[in-house]
Length: 105
Image (cartoon, rainbow, N blue to C red; front, side):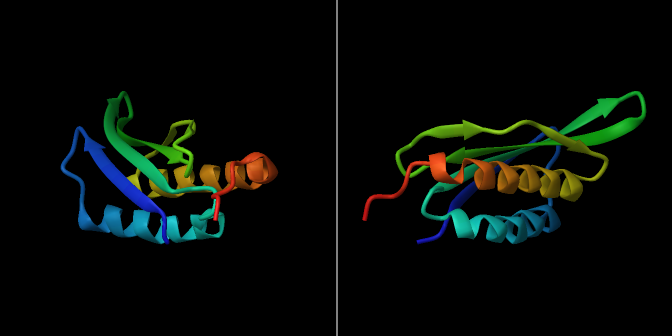
């Protein structure tokens, strides 16, 4: 069974290219599939003094329904913010590996 993902866009309509990037990045987490049942990705367009930037936040849900919130990642391009969020998730899951709950089979 794979990892489910919900994506929400805040402050902009989103785009197929962003969803495609999120799907590619989700494949990186498949090696943690016994520890992760779903993830929630929120991408928000924010406007600052130097223009628009994008904030991505990825929250992990374990098979036991434990919610693991990860820090926000901000970049000028939404795809870059998504990649940064998944980079962080991959590192965090790797560090937590032995401490994560395992799916009972």
